[in-house]
Length: 615
Image (tube, rainbow, N blue to C red; front, side, top):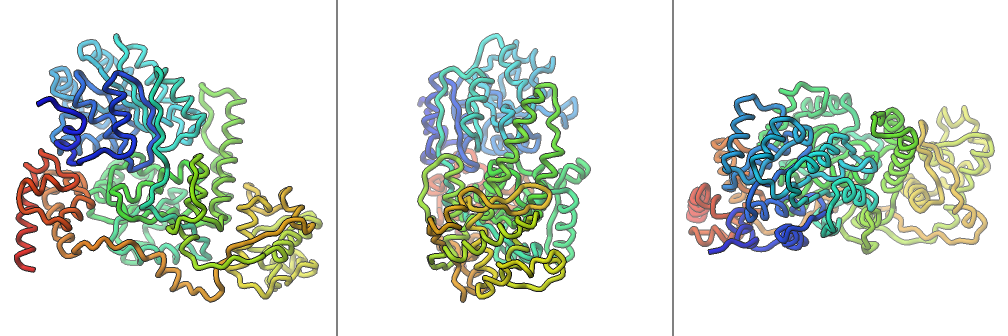
């Protein structure tokens, strides 16, 4: 019987149907055409090149940026019965040349390699004796100097393609790319009339939350409390902070490991392994951790600091909920984050031979534009999902019902007069040749009597104490609304101060009404936490689910692979709901293919039968 994309999908990956966009790209590849797929994290980009690789003659080369990512994907493919190898700098010579020999013998269908290896003598000699039918470029935004993660080594791909005796199909994939980055990818890879497909950026299972706490660590503990016994990643802006937060969590009895570039290679590998194998549930890391991490059961991602771009935030936060289950993405914001990111941008390493001084200036300006967008996102008092989707050029409703804003009980009021007082206060401060941040602005308007306010003489301003009858949470909400709507500008400089934007004039002159959706005064913090903690109930027998998870851990330990490679949490939940009693019923479970059925199926059938008998 001739194999088809659908039969491959079912036999090796255990799925009955493709996700949105996958089949379109697969058909284009199989017809010999190039593709560019813009698909969010968790949308199944790898399926788009792995399925045709099993149907096409010859070898598929997958260019990937990280060793850990390559190793994970190769382990997952092998566990599904698909012959794959990777070549990277951490291999000893014996393993490296054994992989090359397997490729030459025709025993391998997918070969994963970092871009740095493509132009080595051993790799180029391989292409002289082996037919390359496809080159798949993962994280393709790394090609573009306008992308958020430009890597000059990715430009080796272009040179490598030119060295091949026959040009293969080229398939490029990324989770985030503006139109300019997409054009760069197509130009640099010389894609031939590619099928360009953007599947959409809305991942409905993710809950987006921004918090502006006075004490970030206390807020983090609250998040961990409502996500108890779940896998999560905590991103920090620096190595120092990563070490500090990890140490504090461990001291507070929360098992956590850390990951950043300053650690030894041995500790990084050990900590990542512990997290991937579910030995430890909390990973505290810089952005050095995670690109392409395939762990499917991450239930929450916390950004302890604001990232410097929406692209970076969307990609990092998107590592939650890859299995399609409800997940939470929380950003803990403070104005200090602006100052830190400004320092990082101003001291970033953009000095390489491929960039002209003019290009470096443009890139820096774009970095500050991206940072301003993040400030607006963190200040937004409107639907966060709407903000994200609009940034990526996608239409979206103004109320999603599943973000921190939409879940907060609020009331819509005419806030024109308070808005005028806020804007007027910023103007009065500027008249004295000064600027202030959000905290000082609110202190002035509420008539506080702290030392720094008095030293600046702000108690003599005509706006001092004008909004003393408004609660602090509502006043901060109003200020953030004015920032998000472009009436106030927050300076992304050392001090994160406020100034009037041009749009403020119409409000100050009474020519424009300002309506705001404000949090209700009587909404207590405990009520808000309760709303945020509420997730959809899938009706899964939790005792059985935990029993299957323990079985999975034992099997994974036996095979020396991360637990999610055996079966994802989503697959285990499907087993809990359907309770398969034989091979045919097990093969009907989402994520159970023929090879995994033969390898693991009977053990899970027996476990389910044992549980059902006792219950």
